[in-house]
Length: 112
Length: 113
Image 1 (cartoon, helix red, strand yellow):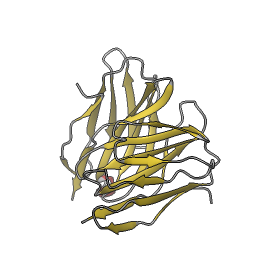
Image 2 (image 1 turned 45 degrees about the vertical axis):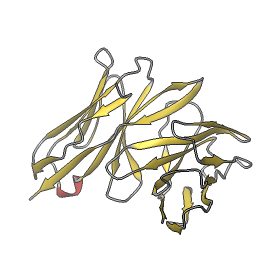
Image 3 (image 1 turned 90 degrees about the vertical axis):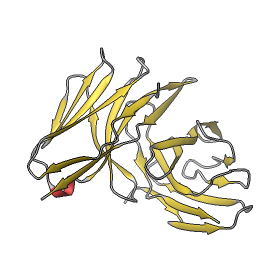
Image 4 (image 1 turned 180 degrees about the horizontal axis):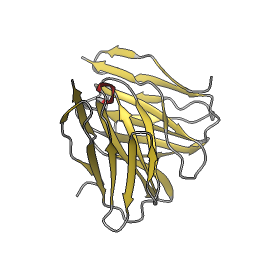
């Protein structure tokens, strides 16, 4: 089982739709969680951290379920500019060091 | 402005040549990381360094080498031993040891023919 798994998609949705992505992780000792956005041929950029109680930033909502070991990202009222790949990042420890592990990413295409 | 600078943006090399990718940060971050990304794939960790003069192998370190002589700099050498070096290379840094996110440079796209 891979450490961090995401459905690669693509998710193809119309403008204004609500779309949700999930990401599962295998290391129950993982301590911090993030969602990044990556545009084609660019570097990943932090979208939001994921907190245990869930958190919201405008149209974006992130949730963490430690019992089931997954995090989710909900995007409401999708915009054309939301089209990108969304990477889930989980930080655990490896030999005492704090290591971020990335999922393969979920591709989102928002069409008019 | 503070940030991470990777250079060059595009790099072309012949097979059998070593090549060094630059990564410099002025964020005063302690930890630095090198990732490799192949088309349609996630990021895979090559090497990381938590502190100056110390670095650790990641998941795919074979064929690569690094140094961390200064806090600001973490260059990556792709050696001729790396079997499939053509990829997008991303350098990142992070402050401290807490639950803080990575900040990325804008990447170097290496093509080896």
